Length: 415
Image (tube, rainbow, N blue to C red; front, side, top):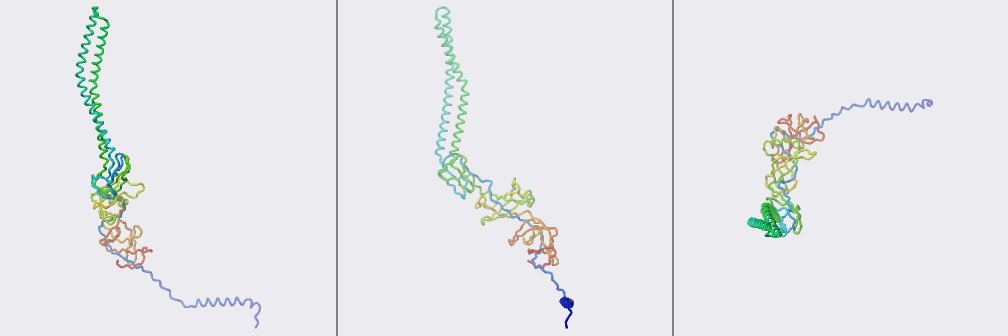
């Protein structure tokens, strides 16, 4: 049977419509599946039951070893270095010789100053003897002046009676004037005696001071340790020529060592409270395996611009002979006790001020205040936090979860 042309043209569309209708019918009549149930995931965590206690927070600080009794010995004279008994790192006692300078030039100067002093003392003795002679000679000079005055009177009397000549009178007058000048000079010498004596005495005192200075310089040719300590640095060697002010040896008192360490501003109120109560804050440290015990003695009086704290000065109370000056030190400072604080592992803290407590199988966030660190009886480092919402028996999550949020389903087991 032959189809009409019009139907032939519509046949593809009819077949397509029949196919679509059949597909829709199959979708409508397919069997329905029950919905799948998605179970909420449960995260396994470790928990720790807490009991708030009274503990002393600890803070880790970093500083370096200093000493207020560190002496840089310098040359007080110009001389050649003869010997250097000092050795870097060696312990010395007060009075031990550290550097010996060539003292031959200094000895010559002492002799010169002694000779100057002896000369001035001889001049003073000569002046005193001359003064005694001047006093005796003044009486004789005055007697001679009286005789010269009488000779003038006689010559005048003879001339008045035409028994003498004018030349005789002039000669007598000249002798009188010369004798009067001699008396005046002798009197001037006596009047100047006190002044010349004081001048010589002043020059003697100056010469004595110069001699004492020369003797002191000679003594300074042997540079000695001013106190018991340890040599930190030796700057010269035999044969060096040193001038006044050149560095020779640096040493420090091993019994006065301190550690300077910045204390964060957040802990300064507690530190100042301990200092005001005269209860020293104790710190512990280890340097090259050597345990050190320190006490906070005071706070620095000056802080650098932009500093977030103040430097504390810790006095080393344990044996310090083997601690080098300038050594870097990490120390743990114990602060005054705090009430109602909880010691937790570091993993329990999220950020700076948040922990999670396990309640009804879900995580509940709590804001806390971090008050320091603490080392428990087993030597484990823990963090101390405080919050009014913390209660004895709370189960705190100690597992670090990357997706920790309030309400997260977890399953906790004791750590």
